[in-house]
Each structure stands twice: as C-alpha cells, then as structure tokens.
Length: 363
Image (cartoon, rainbow, N blue to C red; front, top):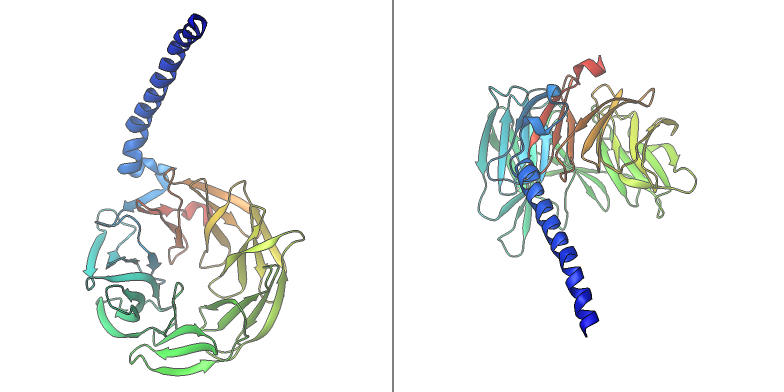
C-alpha cells in the first residue's frame, strides 16, 4: 500500500505540470489566435502589400454564394436571408455595401451575373412555406430593382445559375435536356437536346452551351458543345483520367470554353485540358488539396485555393507558380474570382472578402 501511495505522490508533479502546460497553451491560443480568428484585419492576410481592400458582410458569417460583375466594380453576396450589393470593391475608401432583405424564411443559395453585367439572377428557397417552394428572381444590376421572378423548375435544386450574355434567358438542367426560360416573363421558351446521363452544363461567353458528361467511375469525361448560341450540342472531345486516378468534380471551364480544369484524385494535382481535342495542357500540383479554382478572363492564368488556407496564382502555359497569397488559419477560401481586367483577384472565406492586386504577376 505504501509503495502504491509513493508512486502516486511522485506522479503528482507530472500531472500538475501537464495541467499547467495545457493551461498555458490555451492562454497562448486565446491571446494570440483569438483576435486573429474573431477579428481578422488587413495584417492577417499576406503578403499585406498586395491587399487592396478587405470587408465583411454585416450580420453574416458565411454567404451562400458570391458573384462578380464581369464588366464593372460590383459584387453581390447571397444570403442566407438577404442580398448584398457591394460597389467599388477595389477601393477601401469608397466601398459601399447595400443590404436588401427578403421575406422572413427566404434563403438565397446561388447568384449569377449575365455576361454583359446588366442582370443578376438569384435562386431562392421559401423555407417557411409548406410545402417548401423555390423561385428565381432577376434584378437589374444598375438599379438593383427586381425585373422578374418565377418558380424554379419542380424538384430542382440549383447551385450553378446560367444566364445568357444579354440576361434575357435563363438555363436550367432537366431530364429532357436543358430548358431555356425567358427572364422577363418566366415562360419556358424551348428545350435544348443534350446527351443523357450525369454531368454538368456550362455556358461560354459566346452563349455556346457545353455539357460535360462523366462515366460511373469518374475516369472519363466527354465534352459536348453547341456550334451556335443555344443550339443542340455535339461531341467535341473525350478526356481520360491518368492511370490509377479518377477525376474530382466539379470541372471548371474557361470563359471562352477553350480550357477545362479539374482535380485528380488521389493526387493533389489540378489538370488543365484543351477542350477541342482533350489534350493535357498543364499539371498544377502542390502538397495540399485544392478547394476551388478560377480562370483569368484571358484564360492564361488559373488561381487555386488550397486546404492550407493559401491561394496560388499559376501561369497555365508554363505550369509555373507566380505568387502565393495567405488567408486566415482554419478558414479555407471557398470563393475565387478575377476582376474584369484580370489584374485583381477576389477571395472569400468565412470571415471576409479580400481584394488582391496581382497586376505585377500577370503583365
């Protein structure tokens, strides 16, 4: 008995030391990382000299979606219960955020600009109604006034809104193909025939419809594209995953539809393919998982955010890293977009939206 008691007395300083050490660690985390996590500032994003602006949304922790005007200095954020209009996003002295509140229970899940920047579409769920209903609302981006609204397709959930370049047509996926809707009346115009099977629909800057189909094992993608605006598609190319791997969706098309970027599992790389013939153009790899990516307007550069809270700007032609941007610890960047001139990059995490000056790297 005395031997056992003696060992326990000897262990007491060790136990106390562990408790004191853990308390000190908690203190350090609270003092140094607490302000960083709760109250991020310009200094928490690096390199600081590249930060043009940083702002957050009042009352929101994480917007459901962000969309950037392709023609001007306007950004919209979706919900969940509000629409935020952000003007002059690159000028911290003049940035203005206007909040448009929706009806109680409404949740905004997706936003998208038309190619000419005149219209913005939102996918909204009427959460408090029974049964739940969904609708599409179209706004004039200049006046921020509602242009039209109508029910979304039955039993359809939209994460990727597609609007024509002039904002007059909305495209949604359906069992029979792709439905083309009039944004001013909400009426169905026609249904475009596309290949059956799982995949993703896209729209290029020239209003050419693209359907990227996949096989059951995610080992092959087939690209179908229309030759003219809003016409039926035809097979363009087939893209096979490297041996021993599979594709990690979703794929991303460049604005003109000439390039396709997609992750490759179980590697860490993102591959860029030429759509016209399915040829591999670049392998972009770091030792972290890619979270999201964005093409520059020219298609010459790709920005990729990673699980280590960083963003790397890549030159596609040479597969070269041009610069690395650092976000907040523990908050991966889930939104990326190049400014209309390609010289700014906008990133969004759970705490803030940051505008970066990348002009020196893309000239």
